[in-house]
Image (cartoon, rainbow, N blue to C red):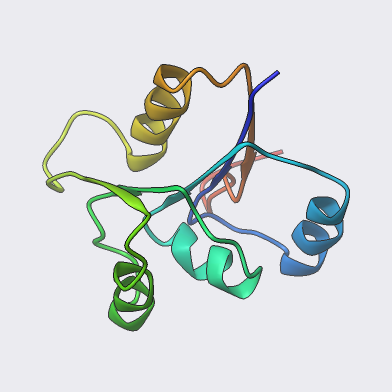
Amino acid sequence: MKRCLIVTGGKLDLSFAGLFLKHERFQKIIAVDAGLEAAKALDLEPDMIVGDFDTVKPEILEYYRQREHIVWDTHEPEKDETDTELALLRAQASGCEEIVILGAQGDGWII
């Protein structure tokens, strides 16, 4: 089964994520916009980066732009889908059967 990890720019406890990732294996890693900051903090090397890059710090963006093997899926900020929705579509299109999302909870969520 092809598994995909999507790291988004929502709230993410890096300690939890680090412990979680120690026991998990993914065939594809997708970072979404500001999720690049968490990806760097967790020492993840994404296969793909998706977004309009309106919320990621420029120095983090530049850090990953130096990696030639990464596929970039760049979008305009004026679009119908969220960056996370676009990442989910890309994961599905690449044949991932299981998708794990870290950082999907934003400030507006009520649990």
